[in-house]
Image 1 (cartoon, rainbow, N blue to C red):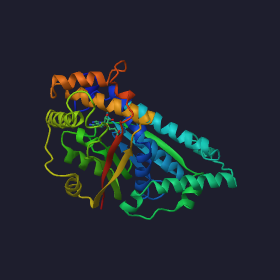
Image 2 (spheres, rainbow, N blue to C red):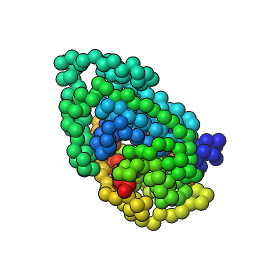
Image 3 (cartoon, rainbow, N blue to C red):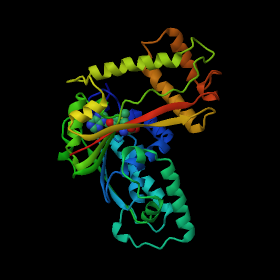
Image 4 (cartoon, rainbow, N blue to C red):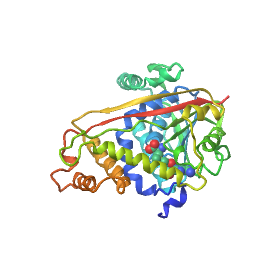
Length: 357
Ligand SMILES: C[S@@+](CC[C@H](N)C(=O)[O-])C[C@H]1O[C@@H](n2cnc3c(N)ncnc32)[C@H](O)[C@@H]1O
C-alpha cells in the first residue's frame, strides 16, 4: 500500500493513475460531451452540478463547457485525493477558458462582474449555431432521458453568457453524507466511483442526500468491457485479451472483498437506485466505437489500457502470456502494440439515473 491509498478504501494509488485517467478522458471526450449535454438538459437554469470522484476531470470539463453554453451555473468537484482534485479543477477551468477564448464576449471565469457582452457577429452566430447543432447531433441521450432540448438557437444564444463557478471539496464520501458538504444540487454525477466504496448502497444514499427535490443522480457504472485487440495477435496463445479481462474481473472481486467493511450489493444498479428511493429510474449506454486504423489517441489509450490489465493479471495468466505482454508493451520490440494498425476501441459507457422525489 502506498501513501495515497490512505485517502480511499480501495488500496489504490490514485495519484499514480493520473496519466491513465487523462488518456481515458482524452479518448472519451466526445462521449463525455454527449452525455453531459443530455444530463444538463434535465436541469433548470443556473444549476448546481456535482462531479463526485472527478478523477482527472474529463466529465468535469464537459459539464463546465455545457454550463458555460447554457448561461452558467455552479460545478462542484468532490474527491478524496487532493492530487486528483487539483488536476480535475485545472482541467475544468482550462476547458472553460478555451470555450471563452472561442467566444470573446463571454463572461470571464474569475470575474463575473466583468460580464459586459459584445453582440456576436453574424459569422460568430453561425459558428455557434453549427457547434450547437453538432453537439445536439451527438447527444441522442437527450431523447433517452426525457426532457426536450432547448434547441440549437437557445444553446447558441446562451453560449455568450455563461459564468461558471467551480468549487473543489476534498472528502471521503463513504464517511460523510454529501449534503453536509455542499448546497442542494440539481445533478449529482459519479463515474466509476461508487464501486470503490465499501458499501455501495450506503454510498448511493449518501449521494442522494445532496439532491434538491426533483434532482437527478447519475452513475456511470457497470459498462461491458472494452475491446481493443485482435483475437489472434500472431504471438502466443490466441484470446489474450479475453484472459486479461477474466483476470481483471477476478482482481475486481478481490478489490471489493478486500475493503475494510465491504458489503456485497447482490443486485443491479437499477435496484440500487430504486432502493435509494429514486424515481424515474433508467439507464442508457453510449457506444465508444473507434475502429482501426488507430489515431494517436486510440493508440496511446490501448497501450495504457493493456498495460493496466497486465499489471493486474500477473499471477492469473500463464508465463507465456506474461512473456507476450512484455513484448507487446516494449517499444523496442518488433511486436510492440504501438506499431500495429489493427488495434481499436470498442466499448460503451453505461449511465444509470434516477430522480429524487
Ligand atoms: C476510477 S476513478 C474515476 C474518475 C472519473 N470519475 C472517471 O470516470 O474517469 C475513481 C475516483 O474516485 C475517487 N474516490 C475513490 N474513493 C473515494 C471516496 N471514498 N471518496 C471520494 N472519492 C473517492 C478517486 O480518487 C478517483 O478520483
